[in-house]
Image 1: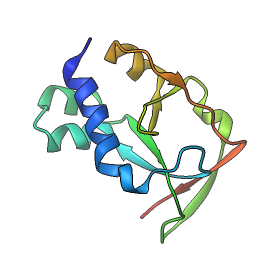
Image 2 (image 1 turned 180 degrees about the vertical axis):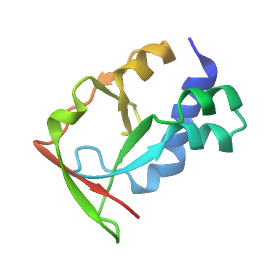
Image 3 (image 1 turned 135 degrees about the horizontal axis):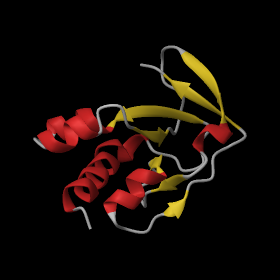
Image 4 (image 1 turned 180 degrees about the horizontal axis):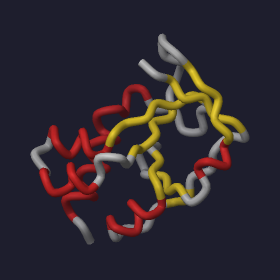
Length: 111
């Protein structure tokens, strides 16, 4: 099990918990590399700088929105907190996660 990566995913879930609504069509993308930087994990920052988790939102955020085909999120895993992330991240974390079931279309919120 990759404790740093698991801890990083847990932390992202904790930080965004007040905004999360599982099954929501609206979501926010959060950079795994940026969150690793905030926690001081330089090795994870470089490795995951172009990897994003999605945070399903309770309500749409102000700003631009883009509709995304839900099939984009095939092979995504869902954390207990409700965030979803690519399957390769789940495999590298070394823990089992439930599969993420997206809506037919999702709406990415840019803030």
